[in-house]
Length: 428
Image 1: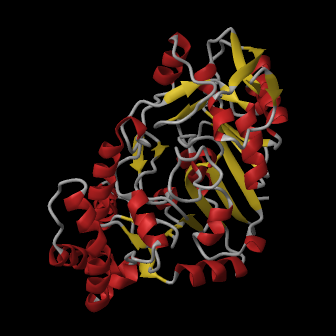
Image 2: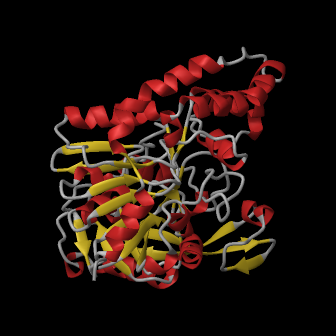
């Protein structure tokens, strides 16, 4: 049976939660491998809508074990709050597994995140202010705190002291903020230890054993390809690797054990936060996409920037992730347009460019070159097979597939769990 990676092929918010949930009943483990509570997935089950931020989408599937891998940064207060909210709605969260090697977000990480972003002013990145970047920075600087440190007070205290020796100097002397008390942080973090202890495990061992036993394991990225710290629109990126390679480093499962890499692709394009966006719309079409598509960030609450489909980005995602399939979401949102523009290339300094430029400056100056495709007016939300779609909708999907470089194996025609057309099984 396969091990699969499922990730965003644009700037995030493509509908990964719906795709993961669709597969959740057929897989044994769903694993978050990067990011933190700066991600957001909306999953609709019947008449119930669930907004997940830190937890894997598989937590809504009774037979599935949800896992938070070592590559995730975890705010324990957020984790416990999200678990409590699901428990109150009757969702069983007892199967959750949390890597003992995952790094913890502390109150001083969120403080540093917020004051740094304010200090940058017009040069700000557009972070969520949830401490994600500073936590990853501490991880790389080797002054981070891991889940396992909650169970050794001496080590925890030493690590908090080491982190705050420097941070308090910066907070006081640069940002004119009060120093943060070491003991207060230690006490707060120790207060979470017993509450999360039932979930803590050696997830790397468990996942590798599961794959060896023939279990189906689904690795779920938190953000999109273009937000990858190495392969995205740097510096307007997240602080981790949501691309397929991050699934290996973020879980301890080797690349030879992964059979399939599925890219989630919205039928148009959105992004949240600052940074270049060649197909962004500032007119009534952009507002219509935002309104019809409900384009507001699950985690941030911010309106998403909206634009037409960008095939250059899709081809890039296919390349850097080694995508084997696409899941095309929100096709229903495009119903009603007589013609639908699709960006097939860029114009940069008067030249046609068909691949994503590696230069940040070139990408900032890229102008979209559009090809117009005929639209459709028929309601597609009840379509169950590809042939049920209007001819123009079929042609649109086939054109995107050809331009993007990987087969489209599933299509979302509405927000509900059952509003999906499956063309090829991801689990075959």
